[in-house]
Amino acid sequence: MERSIEYPLTGVRRQQWIRQAEPVAVDTGGPKTAFKLLILFLLVLYSNVSVIFKLDAFRPALLIAVAALTMMVIELGQLRQSFKLMWPQSAMVLAFFGACIISTPTAFWVGHAVDQTIDVGKIVLVYILLENVITSEDRLRKVLFTLVIGGIFPAVGTIDHYKEGILVEHSRAAWRGIFGNPNEVAYALIILVPIALTLASKSGWFVRVGLWLILAVYMLAIFLTFSRGGLLALFAVVALMGWKQKSALIRIGLAAGMVGGLVVIAMFWTRSSGGFSNIKQDGSVQERMVTLEAGMRMFLRNPLLGVGPGDSSVAYALYAGRDADCGCHDQLVVHNAYIQALAEVGILGSVPFLLFIFVSLYQAWKLGSGPLGPYATALELAMWGLVLCFISGGFIYTWWPYILVGVIAATRRISDSMPAEGAHAV
Image 1: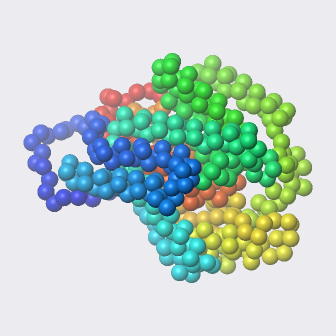
Image 2: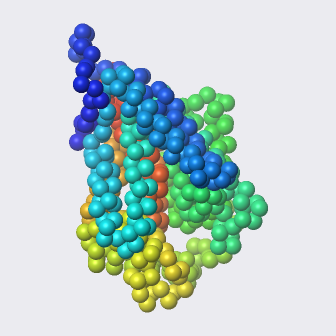
Image 3: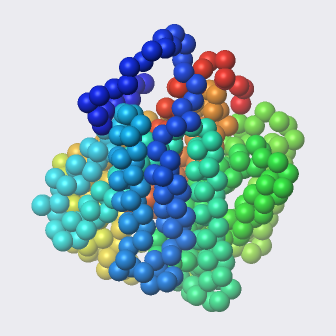
């Protein structure tokens, strides 16, 4: 479980003239152009360039990802380096992708399942890219900074839409494209909060102030989504962050922030469908409960392969039955990622998906005591945010689980390559 699988790209290896008895230092090499294209891809993904400038026909994010993968293969060959897949994450994500492929022919709506499976394939390729081009602590830090900077786009876009009155359900703010759903905006920003805080703690004052300003923008955007699940996940992540801190001053500061947040929520948090009071009479909550019941019916009737990738929404009307009379929409995705996986890809896909997520969470926790401890702890907390957001949203086909796990796998490889004396306390 602690070893990676290596696939040499060339049949000829350079002869090693120097015997290395001790663990080697962090590899600062690796594909350079592919890494730069990865950074560009992440920025394009977050910034919604294709939606804003109506470039959907050109698929800029996909073109950049393909170029990055092509350069990765070329550069690994030039450097005579191995193509690596980290165990068990890589095997699990490929197994999940395989389950999507196998379940497609028997899907509720084959055409829709094909489209979703193709999207999963794109995500898997980018995951493999992350594993193979993040080869040093410096590159890891750059990727984390890129994620935090990228989060500014949906955060500012969400705030702007709220200001302009462009709302979902008459009261909730979101942005465009992959950030067009308020819950997905909240979820995408929550997982960046611990990463931004860790980067701030390891930066100079000028950068630290900038990161704190970014965090303030994140918090406002999350608030304006009026996502109940997102808000609960955010408080849980902040509480975990405080629990892990050794500094009493930081703990007090985080506790004060949580108390202040609760006061603000009590005074100003509201949405057209209701807040945290009268949840039993809340139509939105009732919708979610119906999707969970429908999702379990889908799984029980199709336990091995499910109803097909992405098809829980189109199968919803059939499996919701009389419960659909609650005033719900005709098509709804299961509002729980764990049940969504069971419903759409059955046992064959949900087991590798869950292992992919929870093994990575465990590894991030374990890496917290290693040489890259602060970064690993930030990724662990981000994973906790993801795991908690999964409870109230169907997010198994979004980019963020695979990006986070790809970064964790790369962090583990970098940490393993560092000499023992390079380790430092968290």
